[in-house]
Amino acid sequence: MLTSSSSFKRLNSLLLGALGDRGARKSLSMMATSNEDDSNTANDDGDDDDDQPFTPWAVSVASGHTLLRSPQHNKGLAFTEKERDAHYLRGLLPPAVLTQELQEKKILHLLRQYQVPLQRYIAMMDLQETNEKLFYKLLIDNVEELLPVVYTPVVGEACQKYGSIFRRPQGLYISLKDKGKILDVLKNWPEKNIQVIVVTDGERILGLGDLGCQGMGIPIGKLSLYTALGGVRPSVCLPVTIDVGTKNETLLNDEFYIGLKQKRATGEEYDDLLAEFMTAVKKNYGEKVLIQFEDFANHNAFDLLVKYRTSHLVFNDDIQGTACVVLGGLLSALKLIGGTLADHTFLFLGAGEAGTGIAELISLEILKKTKLTVEESRKKIWLVDSKGLVVRSRKDSLQHFKQPWAHDHEPVTGLLEAVKAIKPSILIGTSGVGKQFTKEVIEAMSSINAKPLIMALSNPTSQSECTAEEAYTWSNGHAIFASGSPFDPVIYDGKEFVSGQANNAYIFPGFGLGLIMCGAIRVHDEFLLAAAEALASQVTEEDYAKGIIYPRFKNIRKISATIAAKVASRAYEFGKCYEVLKLLYQ
Ligand SMILES: NC(=O)C1=CN([C@@H]2O[C@H](COP(=O)(O)OP(=O)(O)OC[C@H]3O[C@@H](n4cnc5c(N)ncnc54)[C@H](OP(=O)(O)O)[C@@H]3O)[C@@H](O)[C@H]2O)C=CC1
Ligand SMILES: CC(=O)C(=O)O
Ligand SMILES: [Mg+2]
Image 1: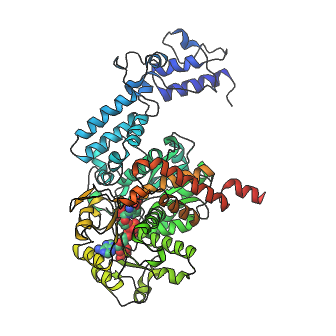
Image 2: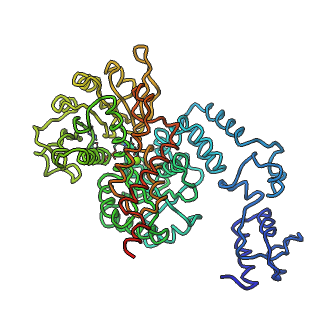
Image 3: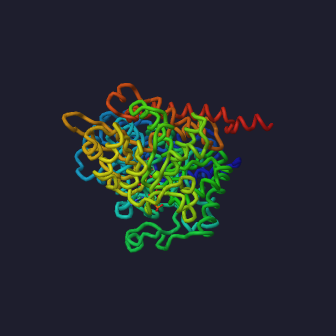
């Protein structure tokens, strides 16, 4: 603890160094309460109050120019006359006082004038970096319009062009250069109390492949949603990109690329860096910090989850969050297509993180609700990968996460052939490849089912397996359709069809909020089921009447709160909360 007068001076100059302007000095001076002699302070501009000493426990509040440059506290023209006096803002702002509502209206008007979606993204990021409160208010109040800007699809393009549009760094970059120093790097982040980290290594950004360090747009976007959709304070959120190089030749040859210009590290080098990161995070922020893995390639994603799920509070959004949102959609879709989950046959295009993650959760739910064995529940689910239907004869060459789904069947190569052979009632696209649900595929689904359920989950829009218009047109208006990236309503045969957005954004903000709220220290599969059930319970009769299987996004904060409450309560039941474990083992 600082006790001496010289220590006060040191603190004083440290604070001045950090705040760095006259307004800050005045603000600090105003807060001084000690009678210590501090006549030799670094403040030498002759102002009376500059000679006052400082107490070490005074909380510093930025003022003046510094305040206007602080995104957390800046209110732009919304500072009132009184605040302008109190915070030394007179003259630094034009005289007009505009309410936050008026500023919101102005920015929305401006955003709508941009024809190029990426311009809207840049404008939104600029706002986040200058006036955080206004950014979140705008996003919350206009979530259906602005989600596609800060999230999929536009964030995908932003990541692809991140080097060119880069203005100010956002988030924390950890690269191979930081090996052995990751704890120090974490300590450089200005906020000390962190509750949620979204981390990527940039290898599978949406369906756009390896974007290396430029994947940073994803953790930033996801964490913006933690706040806007889940109500988690921005200051406790930390976006992280781990840069181990990239195999993207275009980026390696791009002079504006912001990451390490080297081939992506693999094997021990990769594992060691990740292990150091995980240890440093727990050491710096404790056991209750939530680490959300995002957009890792599947050859690392599954292993990381298995490795750290017993020692850290980890959650893989692509495997688990996606599984929840799809299971939630399926549970609600049963009201429209009839039967129980176990009565249906599922066919996936894509047998990676999303595909097999969803398959696992569907099977788990079927197991809970029926007397079927694991093997029987899995047999209702079939997957197609780039080599065709996943079948037993391929088992030896399959990655471990595909093996449970390798059932007895003749080899089948194409999706259309698989649809004809398996006769699914539900078709789910998780391939990351656009346009795979062709007219023939949708027609085949429609010839087998009165109401085929089609989910084209791949992101961004360019990678969607089909569009909403294609699904409704090719099924003659019979399909129930949902997609990972949003589509506008479609008019077919004089009727309006509104599709749902099957995106894990429905889940992770509420799921994460629930975990941090209850002090959970591990994630259990039961929490995922709780989140899916909570999501399904939010769909209204009015939604069903319109053929929609997800609740309206405009109600997302209520939806997230409901999910959070269900997850927290399930966590207590399962004793996965720190306080519960303490009680059990004390
Ligand atoms: N809506 C949402 O909330 C979410 C959407 N997604 C989206 O899902 C997509 C996939 O993500 P993820 O599962 O993590 O990716 P993975 O790379 O783990 O899996 C992709 C799978 O698709 C298969 N595949 C690729 N091309 C074809 C093809 N032409 N025909 C058939 N199968 C093919 C791959 O086959 P093989 O194994 O043989 O290589 C692999 O099994 C991405 O676009 C992502 O954006 C992901 C998470 C959430
Ligand atoms: C939505 C998401 O997490 C993805 O497409 O990867
Ligand atoms: Mg993702």
